[in-house]
Amino acid sequence: MARYALRRLLISIPVIIAASIVVFFGVTIVGDPLGELLITPGVDMATIDRIVERRHLDRPLWVQYGYWVQTVFTDGFGTTVGGNPIWPDLRRAMWFTLQLIVAAEILALFFGILIGVVAARRQYSVFDYTATTVSFLGYSIPVFWFALILQVLATSFFAATGIRLFYTAGVSSVDPGTGVAFLVDRLQHLTLPIITIAFVSVAAYSRYMRASMLEVVGANYVTTARAKGLPEHQVMRRHALRNALIPIATLAALNFGTVFTGAIVAEVVFALPGMGTFFIRALNDREVYNIMAFLMVTSVVVVIANLLADLAYGLLNPRIRTS
Image (cartoon, rainbow, N blue to C red; front, side, top):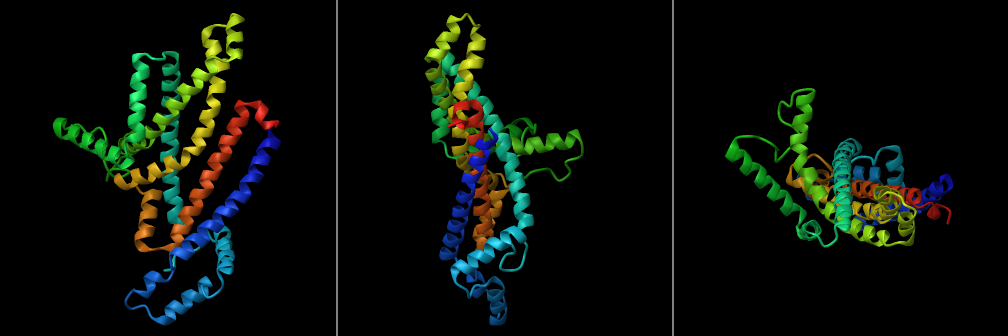
């Protein structure tokens, strides 16, 4: 297993390098780091010349790329054109978004796998048809629209009953309290965003899990396990479920980009201080180096997610890590 993990890790390194090249040259060609300064009143040419010298903007692009990579490792992506450090804001935003994504993915995997298994065990039942219908709705409903619907429902419930179950904006109240009161307040603020992010993933995982379970249940080794007299719950748990989870491990990694996009949209709708807000602010301010940092961090996280999926794939199917 250690050799398999090392091999997958070594494969990930060239992918990250290629991603850094695409991010730097793509953003640099499209956006001018000095674009906003050149149209800002009161900025003299001496200031612009100092920025050009400090950023090496008078050098060829491949030289600029080398200096940028150096700042990534030595200075946390460096600073914005205006001189503000990038890493502190990016780190706070990334940490918050990762918490949202991890919570949403745990919720989505749990319910997606559960719904898929039950739908496969009760094929063509009312539950199966209902799960299929809800899954199609999950695929077709835009994330921002679903987030707005949840906000309307939460606000309408509060207006009708005077009971505040969930908040529709922000990450905490003005005075959230401490201890249990703080945890309850944070949960009230983050429940709707987490449901928004998880909803689409539940639809995907449940459909794939249903199809995978139906395929595995008819396999010869499951029939053999039943013929040996094993109880049905052991057949399902030890033989069918383990092998049916293999496609879900791959799907979870491939679905990470969708989950991350959904998190960005949800953060904007619910006014949360995550990567979505960071990226939108960078676009509005035309901060080229902030955009590069966002895209690079996103690329690395996606690569790590795929690496973890490969490792899970190897754990679930020992033949893969020996091939």
